[in-house]
Length: 441
Image 1 (cartoon, rainbow, N blue to C red):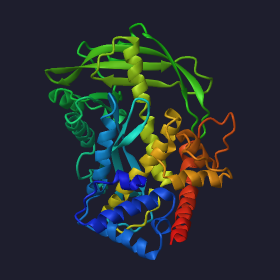
Image 2: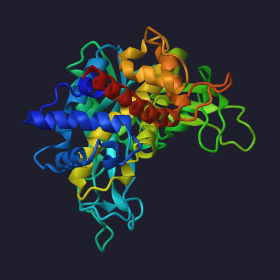
Image 3: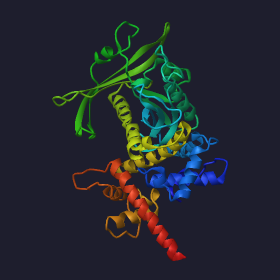
Image 4: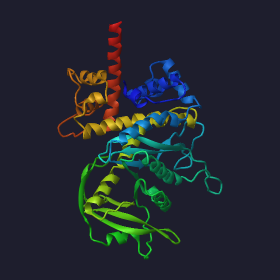
């Protein structure tokens, strides 16, 4: 069974032909994530079928994503703690004649917004997409106001949906993780009202006034630090990897939640010391419902917040690997149906990279078909072994086909070389299967 057939096994679009078409399109897009839909499909008839699927207004994007959500729940159930990370990204379709687009950060830009919930383990294993919002903004009126739903509502609704899911996963503690935009008292109050079935961990945006008259951040920093943590910031565009050393503070505080109401929260601050000259020190100010009186508890929360980078990686794969901003579809609903598929493809690529690093000894055949791992060896001019290789070896072979050099000091491959290499592997594997089928005939 292919990865797509397994991931979409429970799909139900009301017609078996539509179900099969969806699985096939997911396979094609997964095999060639950087290609256009016509280039990824196997011929004109298959391309027409793909466009008919995406044009079918009786199919909601949530219907396409539903089987992946079910698989994600299964993966989550195997973990004691799951981080449910939310964030928003702009999708820029400027210059394209797509009906229903709206303004982006600049009013003249045209595009839409995507706001998913992305589940990862504390060890950074991507478990899947849990939820998503997709919308286009309304243009501003002459008086500068903008109609439509207040966008801050998505953060509160996001927590509510995670809280609902927590009831179905009694053995797994869910933690809602979000950046500064989610620093909303109404969200914290709503979580308290629901009994905090899921924890929340937010980056603090506001240096709030406390009931005693002092400010939040100075209050926390006025105590003695609990200790120091060290970690490595990975290399990014224009920035080399470097070691970071931070002091950690943590205090339980009361935040104003109304004229006569307060809610309790923990504020954790991690401030870099000894940053290199000319480099802005790394500082995080976090708010959470969880107690964190000890250094170990505060350090764990910081580590969980650092996992928020995984959703940035997911967006990177979606936009630069899958090239979703190059999609040429006539309407926003068609884009949404395509994005539902591409989100699953992007998750799979990110998962391959992470599992190759964190679970290197897994058998590759858990994630790749036999033709696929054999193709990786052949394309690298190596004789395929009799037994399936370890996942890390397979991921490195794939990445080497995408430009990863694999030298001793190169570390592990990134997602870009993996998504490029995957296309070569999948094409060759398809050739192997075709040749075998012809021989069997």
